[in-house]
Image 1 (cartoon, one colour):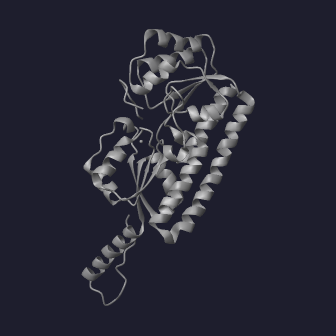
Image 2: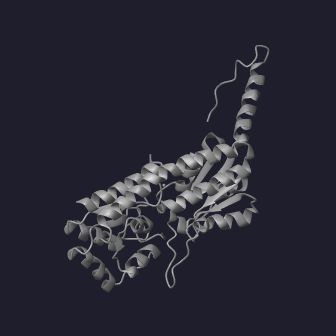
Image 3: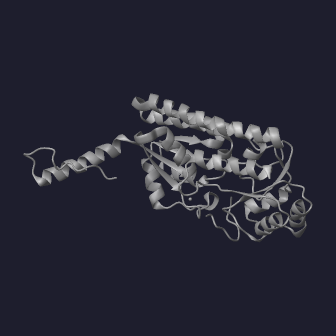
Length: 311
């Protein structure tokens, strides 16, 4: 999702050890506490994730045995155009496991890994998914909206963490199984949407939610030139824009699934046209909203889609 003209890419301390031993001096106690903190930190697997989406999933699998740094957690940061800084480079140089999306979405991770000569275990979600670009088309790299892919990535993360900390491998596997079990209700909700609304048309502003829409049996009727231009940050031709707006005025779609993290004149016109025609608008995002975890976020997305189609 490159940056368009205007964007609202709206993403420990320990207990005191002062009473360890009556014979210890205050300076000795302070030294012991510092050493304890360092031991705890070093015992955790250092993980760097390109976005907080994968950071959250990793925390669900790793629990208190991992220390996760999500490079992009601020919704005003765009993975496609993100410029790495020295803090990111330092975190990656220390990481034992790195989680990236791949597919051209977060290439800055690969660039930093090469420059740091990292030996970290790397999980590339797109590679794990096995998805490729359709003939004559573009790869939809937003694979975290595809729940079967997320299940595969979960297994890969657990395996990578297990290599970094073999003693906790069984724990990582168990946590991964528990996480995958919580993905099943999401797939069931999509199947229910497909049963009730399969074949109905929808519009999008960008390909972000397409895997969710496809799994729900919905048909994207947006002119490809529109969503591709928005994703690339290019201007939409007047002809293509008019064809897109006609989807709403002619009531050819049941909902507009709108990337709320991207705004520009063309997407705002689409949103306004949908609302004017009484067509529900379903906002989605690319990174975790504040206060949400992955499962809560995706349940909210699927429920919002179902609610819009039921109107």
